[in-house]
Length: 260
Image 1 (spheres, rainbow, N blue to C red):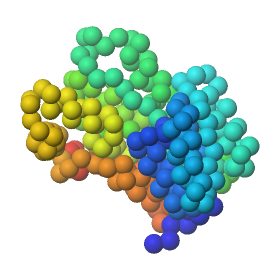
Image 2 (image 1 turned 45 degrees about the horizontal axis):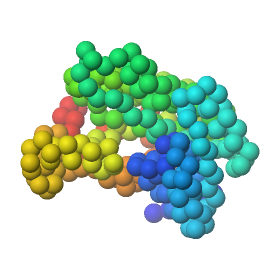
Image 3 (image 1 turned 90 degrees about the vertical axis):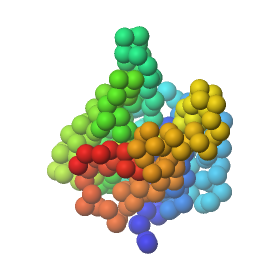
Image 4 (image 1 turned 180 degrees about the horizontal axis):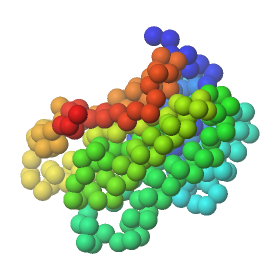
């Protein structure tokens, strides 16, 4: 299937590892030039070199999107190195789990700083470039925003905010030609998930296979997702094949969310 992405320019945040890395590689495989960003310079260069070997251009911006002015600095680098922007994937951010009564204001502030306010600032800075090229913006939240739980007070709140913010941007995007969507992934095979699996093995004494099976049962999912599952969906969403998909929040969850 021809996706019409060859020659497009994409910015993927949090692209040194995990979902962001997978998205960057998937878009590059379709011919996109990619600007990578994160805080791990060595990991970003590794991804950039893999992209360059396959043909497309890759740029690297090592910065912390929590910092004041980082979003504007990043977009200016994209403009300088690539001349414009067609695709923005807001992926950066993780939030702390724990007992609400022990989570501090600083924990909440840090969770919102990277996974919400960084998205807001980057969308604002990138919007003129996306508008100029009738581009696409995808923000990654998480199923905690659809199924809040006591131990995920920060993440559930942040992910719900990401979805609501995306819906607001989509309303503006209808008038200005920018496609906006949001994805709520469930449990995806990343280093973060592996730490949870390992902790469950240590707690129960189960072998890995049983720990995985029982965790999937507990989450109500058919299997754990893969980085490729998320990357493939995003690649389709920002392609010429999905231009009517607008303002959606998609649960990519293996059946976790039971409601309509």
